[in-house]
Amino acid sequence: MDDAEIVALYWARDERAISESALRYGGYCYAIASRILENREDAEESVNDAWVGAWGSIPPQKPELLSAYLGKLTRRIALKRLRGRLAGRRGGGQVALALEELDECLGGGQSADEALDARELGRLIDRFLDGLQETEMRVFVCRYWYLDPVAEIAQRFGFSQSKVKSMLFRTRGKLREQLQKEGYSI
Image (tube, rainbow, N blue to C red; front, side, top):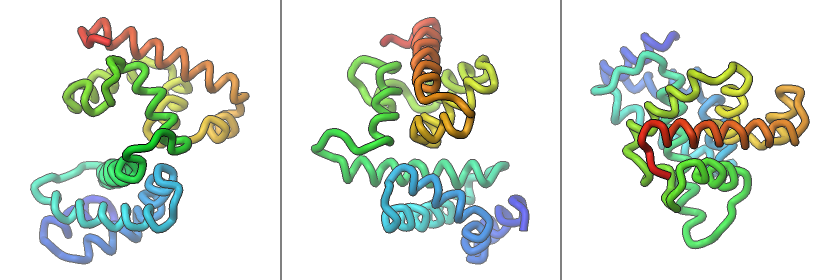
């Protein structure tokens, strides 16, 4: 079943929409949640919560790219679960490290979600990513959207870990500059 048919099931309030979503995108969503949470049970719960979230938001939403929509829901739910788990303590492995790295670009000691209205920040980052070279953009997205560890990114692209770290450092610097040019105070 393709995305349009699955979305039509949601709009018709047909419960098969959830099972079809799980069949088509369950592995994808689980991979996102698992990468963030590093815990099988929490990842499974996050994916199940994503199906509930999709059921509650489609309609009125009518996503054109269902995979991205479900991935975004899963990511948001998993990050919220992680924040709850890490409340009151520092650290948290690769995910916390990646988010900390990105927060350095956004500055002011604020978290990414407090720094700027999410839509505005998203628009600025999208425009920034559009201006990057393909490889630079893919490495950045792997690290800060999919929250992949540096070692895994290095292996995927055939780079040394040192090269990936340098590339991410330079890209974060470019992002910081771009945000400053857009009037975003750091």
